Structures are given as C-alpha cells and as structure tokens.
Image (cartoon, rainbow, N blue to C red; front, side, top):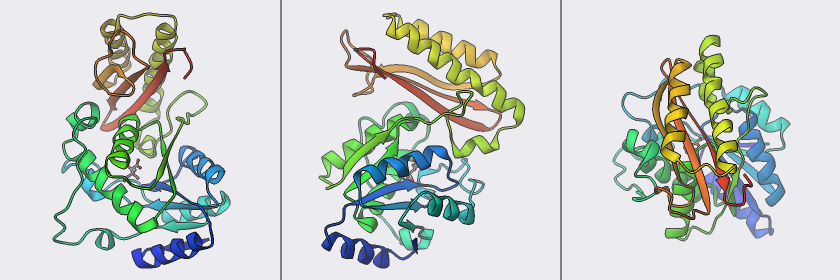
Length: 284
Ligand code: PAF
C-alpha cells in the first residue's frame, strides 16, 4: 500500500494508473476509521480498480469553537485498517500542503447547504466543498464514495459536482450502525458510557418515525416534536429535528419522492447527527 502526502506525487500515481486504463475510486475521510468508513472502501472497490482513501482533518470545516484540535487522530491504526481492507493508497497531506497561507478561493453551494447543519455551523459547507474539490484535484478519481450518515453533505457535494462539472461519479453508501443502533461516527469516542447509552434514543426514535411514516402518517411537525421530546427525555440537547424533502431539503409538498428525517443532538459536549430516508414506495 502506498502512502502519499505530497499532491504532485499523488497526481502522478493516479495519472500513471489512469493511462493504464485503471478506474480510480476515492474515499475521503478525516481518519480515525471505523466500520462505516470501511464499508465505503468496500463500496469503492466494487466500482473501481484502485481504491485511494484520503485522511485529512480539514480545518476549514470546523468553526472556531468546534473540536478541530481534539478531533481523534491515529494514523498508525488507520494505516493498518486500510492495509487490511485492500486500500491501494492513502493520501494524507499536511494542512500546509493543502492550504496556501494566503488561500483566497473557496467554493460555496448556496441552496442545499442553507438549513440543517449549514444553518448551525456557519462556514462548514464552504470548508467541506472546498476541501473535497481540492481532494478531487489531488487524487483525480473517477468515482468517490460518501456516507449517507452526513445526508446534507452528500446532497451538497452531489450538487457541487453537478454544477461545476467535476468528472466524478458520486456514490452514497448506507449508514452503518453499531449492533444496538447507534450510527457509527469517529465522534462516538467522546461519549461516556452513560451518554452513549442515552444517545441510543436517537436511532430508536428515528426507527419509530420510519415505521410511522411508512405506514402513512403525515403530521410531520408532530412526529418531529415527538422525536425531540424523546431525545430531550434521554438527556440529549436537541440541535434540530427536521422532516424534509429528501431531494431538495425543503418542506415536503403533497407528493415528495422521498423524506429525510434528520437529527442533530448533543450528549454532553458531543454533537451527534443521524437520519433516515423514506422513499414514497416505502423502500429505504
Ligand atoms: O465526511 C467527512 O469525513 C468530511 O466532511 C470530508 C468529506 C472528508 C471532508 O473533509
């Protein structure tokens, strides 16, 4: 397995492989890998000859009071997991390799990023779009795989790829959950045992809402209110609970193609997000 930190070396590696007709798959991550990330690696391997995983804790997507400095990092553990899971190369640049000191060009998506996490984390999606565009330019992938857990991120990045004509096929892989339902996240590491137990209220109440929506319940505000109440009763501090059109992130009209039920809540200082998508024919 190759490891690159330099952008030119990374580009030369992929350009050589592309000339040999190889299809390149990219799994962008911020490291501290878990089963969720590895499911993205396995998905990429189904669609590409070469799988490259990037590890970069991107400073521009963290707000000033967020957890950039204490975001969990363990390169050696990540390296081993990549090797064991058939990753061909890791791209792990330093911040100074990715951002010029006087960098003054950023990418903004202005519609899908307006609500949910975008409204609560100013600048977050500008940072995400900019770094993903830079990762695409460094790795030159044919396909890229993102997780459904970051539902808004997936939609925003798909829109960026469409609007800016990136020649990259976007694949979105399902959420991977612990056996008790908790959505996998690098940030779960911050939770105490008690907070982790309490946080199960999120997936429990989402699954209940999923059943009710599939059964035809349409009082979305009431459902969102019940989800909030369940999370608050478990000791969580709700940031948002919203039921939206899964394609547009607007309030659902009479006949949405799909519904997104999106939740963000704090347990202690840890902000967790989770969601479910219900399509009109009831298939997830
Ligand atoms: O989802 C993440 O881990 C990050 O937002 C991403 C896409 C790697 C960009 O830094």
